[in-house]
Length: 283
Image 1 (cartoon, rainbow, N blue to C red):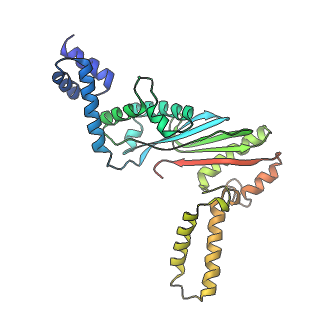
Image 2 (cartoon, rainbow, N blue to C red; image 1 turned 90 degrees about the horizontal axis):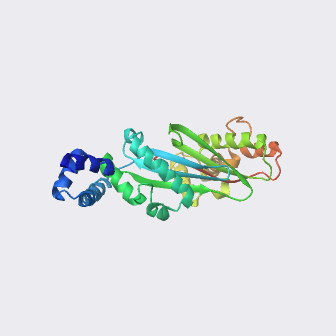
Image 3 (cartoon, helix red, strand yellow; image 1 turned 90 degrees about the vertical axis):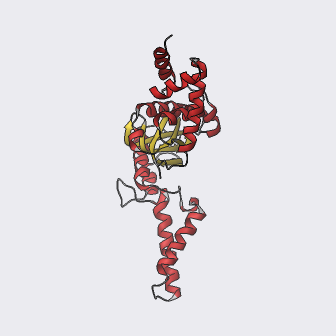
């Protein structure tokens, strides 16, 4: 086999550029297996140099069905790379692995992909090939008994890849068109309204503490008496809780009603929001 043929074969198997493949073959004295290993090592070196850079672009991938849904965030540095075919192919397969592993990140990284290499090794290779920092971000899987799951994708990049994804799980024994419509609308509502928790009790204490600090700072120089400031502060924090808890939010389809009112009006037996997750790239 000529050096040109070896370079062509090496490029096809590794995705590396012509110059890198040529240099690796020369260094390996024509041994293709050694050349692959040289490129892999160089890829690790290239990847490590890029890991200090920021990666806030990318896509969110959704996989699953009404019984089980999974989402995974894969970040890169530029939106241009987020639309790259190699990147998209990698993320699509990664999304199916995420679904199969139940979003266990350690298991995901060790899982062997279709090219017989682990996710971890493929990540290194694609970083070396594309030339940007690429990282696996947040993941989530929802799957519960007696539930029906719904999803929504916003700003779709391609197929099941988007910039924002929502998955929501509704608990009830009933399955009908009324439930399906509500589930789809609820997923859209969550995408638009970005609730922090199902109810006010579920909002993280650290988030509330930070919000209270901001409110206190805002009112500090108001010149109002302390008792009035205290009342205003309490009103603001209660409003924050209401606006950020899903059940108490104004329903996007009919803002005069709250989400909990809509659920009651549906009159679906024992209908409850079991779980939800909203994932926006880089947020």
